[in-house]
Length: 116
Image 1 (cartoon, rainbow, N blue to C red):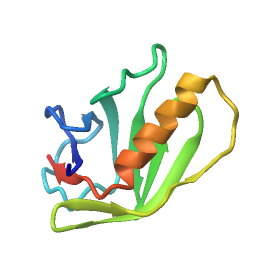
Image 2: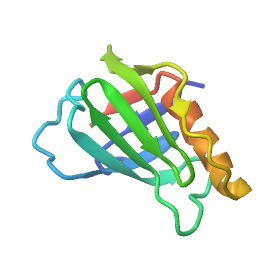
Image 3: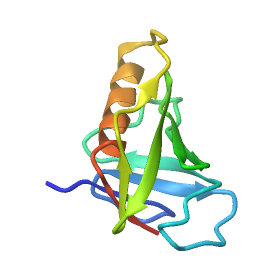
Image 4: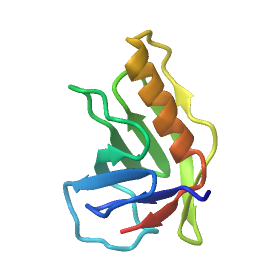
């Protein structure tokens, strides 16, 4: 199954994100300077009281999914987000938040399709 990452309030197979801030670009190649908040994750309920935030800046994506801060360099190639394994802080949190970190990291590192 091919994972998809759609941004800007579009229903998604894996992770649904809404844009925060400037929506002036609809080019999926141009994520730099944009921040998105997840509104749902297929197969995983967002932990109550937490947020899942992806911020794109200078060729890196920073992921905050409730516990740790994770980041990785990325590029968009043929409409896919290409990122390797995410580096992460190593804070211990409640199990549900640590699981959410792992779920989101797996989606980001699985070359999801970008659609704005």
